[in-house]
Amino acid sequence: EPEVTQTPSHQVTQMGQEVILRCVPISNHLYFYWYRQILGQKVEFLVSFYNNEISEKSEIFDDQFSVERPDGSNFTLKIRSTKLEDSAMYFCASSSLSNQPQHFGDGTRLSIL
Amino acid sequence: EDKVVQSPLSLVVHEGDTVTLNCSYEVTNFRSLLWYKQEKKAPTFLFMLTSSGIEKKSGRLSSILDKKELFSILNITATQTGDSAIYLCAVEAANQFYFGTGTSLTVIP
Image (cartoon, rainbow over all chains, first blue to last red; front, side, top):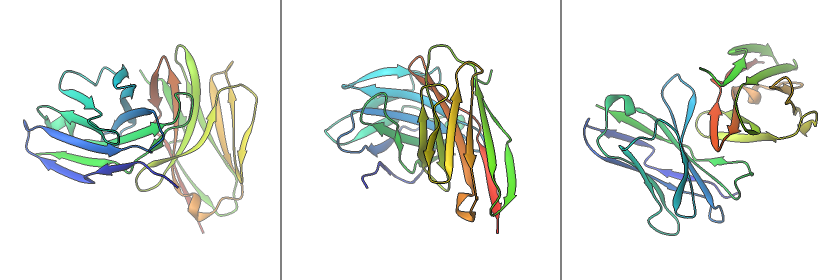
């Protein structure tokens, strides 16, 4: 069964550094999403992306964050200048249509030191 | 404020028991409610509900939505140890997605 893959599985970065989290959505999916889950807290929506542009973003997704689909397969989340509070599990998800269920990747655990 | 509230927060049952997990929500422009099972890593999709009163069923799992009272339940019958996981409820509203904190289910042999 096709799946969403995320790399790396764990990223450790110094505060203030830039990080790029990578995702390969399911190949025929058109809608892409990023979520984060701070340890012990709920999953939080960050952004949705369709047709090479952001469809919707939450209050969390401020100017420090950006997303990109640099080629036909990758979908990336960039955090420009990381803060301690950015430490979390970041999940990528994709769906074939906006009204279809999202399939999640295994996540990237981001640790900011 | 919490837009999606799940209860109970955690539950411990014996194999063979039936469990009911609850999810209530308060959002504007509701579109759908989804249930996911989260074991070690990625949440895996269980159900998507958009209409009231129509039960969705998959094996021992079933779910129903009440859009008037703004809640959904997830039932698991004849529980097995493999059902042990965190069950997440998520609501799509106004093009955003709101998750509850999840219910942690532990099934004891």
